[in-house]
Length: 54
Image 1: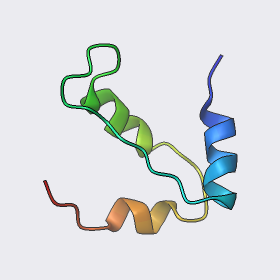
Image 2: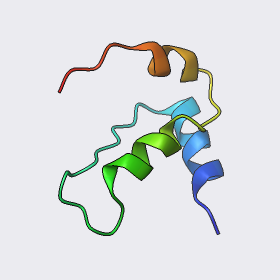
Image 3: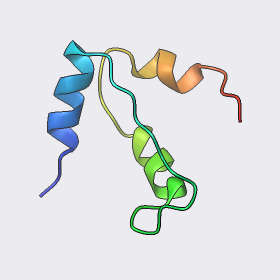
Image 4: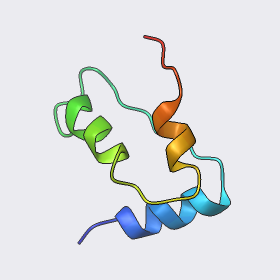
């Protein structure tokens, strides 16, 4: 199964910090960051258009 619907519900009601470790072998950052773009929630547009810094 997927946890996506549960995570989207959390995003609607709580501030959430999603962290990706550069050396994560189980779930590489590139896949995680691509997944962020598929989340459906009220703050998605602002989240996707925010300037990010390395």
